[in-house]
Amino acid sequence: MCTSPIGRPREFDAEAALEKAMAVFWAQGYEGASLTDLTEAMGISRKSLYAAYGNKEDLFRKALQRYELGPGAYVADALRAPTAREVAMAFLAGSARANTLPGLPAGCLGVQGALATGETGRVARDVLAAWRAGGQGLLRDRFRQAVAEGDLPSDADPEKIARYVMTIANGVAVQAAGGATCEELQQVADAALRNWPPA
Image (cartoon, rainbow, N blue to C red; front, top):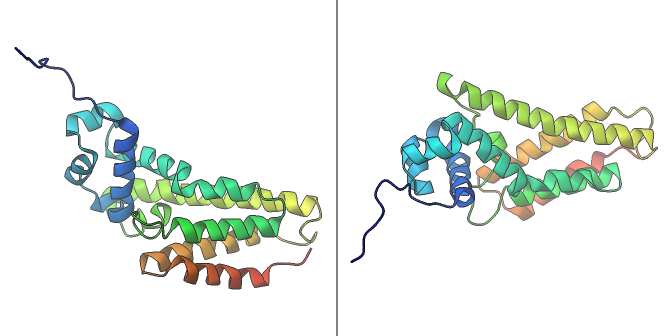
């Protein structure tokens, strides 16, 4: 006779479930993603969600970390490029690719996750603003290094260059969400880099 254990929690793949939560937040934003949407996509109960990930805000933070290590991994890769111009090129090319990945929502979780939120989405908006500022800070520090090494002119402003690159990348995300293709976005990135300061 076959019996099933009573009271045993259902096993699930926490990483696969987090990947699904990331896609829900990416497609619907923080406020638009209801707990029902999240639990259905993840294939778990609310109780399991709270036990494994904490509340919705905690889950969102974990999903953003997952995004950073997955589709957003191009940022870390770009920062390792040998010259400042190649950093910017890799950053913008990576943005164009990540924002148009087949089978995933168009655009960027970090840009669209909380652009238009009410009071209940304030935490997500603040988390994403800090996340984007952190990315810009990484670019700024890399460009400061480029000035110190003579790869950028001594009078170049690393903060302004980082903001420029980040602004283009954020625009790429918005355009991707509107249906622009990777090739079209790469053309934008190429055009933006024509203004790159000479060494």
